[in-house]
Length: 487
Image (tube, rainbow, N blue to C red; front, side, top):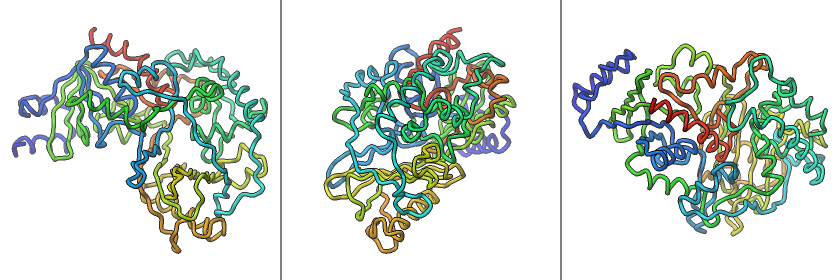
């Protein structure tokens, strides 16, 4: 890039003046200018799926801008150099809803029923690392009965919440049951035995599930998920890691994917979008597209390069931040085939609604059987937590295992130093707005942003947070996007 062009970009970024003339194509060489029908920002589950469907099935040109060095988002895989085993520590299994299995088939990836090997469960007091010996887990029949009850409750709302919230209840007509704190509903219908399963599968409930609105619990663990869990229908690749799907999608999309790239400025209008993208090698690209598809969590911080409107800022400022992390560590002093579930001590002996009352949670699951003592890690907080702070907190929890006498040499180190083999941030935002905001039409207001300023949205905020449901939602709005593209 010439000094003149660098100066122009810097002036644009400093002044934030949304003048298209400042970033016209003549400011960029031909090889640095990309003209497409749809620019997709984010190459996770929804962005990758949308790119493949638009380009391959709808003859629509696309470019995908992805910040990481790969596609796949929260699909994380650690390749063990000793055993050669692939350990999935992000997404573990897939819902078969909609065209999920067909998406694997189009990339020639055979699938099989998800089957997680049984392990010895050890329940740990999250406040001190001691065994929570008086905790009594719910019995299988009790869990099954509670899940079936939840399945029946959620079934009546499927037309209003899937795929996505396009047909959600009009303002003033949201059923009171959806706006009821989940703890009250759980007591009313004897659902408490299902809570540990709901929290384990969906991650909901951090800081306490009782006061979360039933609607939000349903969005985290809704009818398709509970139905597929009861029927044993979750699936996974038969002989490969979960990353293979995205590796093959990346190979298919080829040069239409810009990896390790970020949008540093975006100008949007009813006539289309113009983006400046910064790449890892220091170069910049100019993208001009008819439509923009944003697939990342639409927090205000993430939206800043796109100059959000006052209405967008007002609506997207209502999200609640979520801090979660996944990884693989080595625990030489903890037996393999063991799962350590950290619980709030008030959950003992059978207060299942309290299992996640603590402001953080940790799950350590054995992921090796060859003596390497590898454990997958899931850690989350309901307060701001950095990558470094998360690692330190996990280390502190392992030190507690040692000082409490639960596992005297859990980390294999006297000072508790942990070997982190892989670690990824899965931070996001989520729905936690008040009942009155939902009753006043918040859902309709947020969905009313679809298509405005030539901008469309998909991803976990717009439906239930599972790859299958996200793909199903994406299928529901692609015809709308295409109609606006051709209109």
